[in-house]
Length: 119
Image (cartoon, one colour):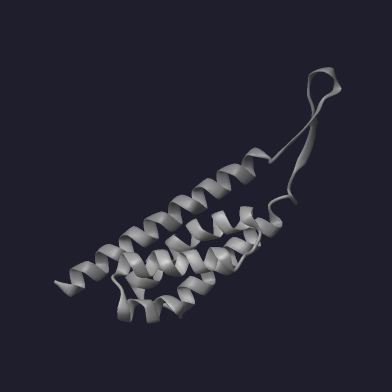
């Protein structure tokens, strides 16, 4: 909603950066603020491109769920000299990579379809 108002005054680049900066500052924790800033740039671009607050809310909720569940599927393996190593199972890593690629392709395809409709 902040970016929508910025778009009335500033260029799209400035609007996205300003809204992402505010989004990052709202997270207060410096480490979260940096990640939120870069995530805010992506989400800001999505809003500018598709004008859908629902898409932005979905991406934000999806990210929060993934970050919350990330530590859960760890498995314990013993390596040399009894040093404990924690890692994700390979299926989890491959599933995440596949879902990322599918999502990225969906954004590209939707973007191209909208451009063709505009021409």
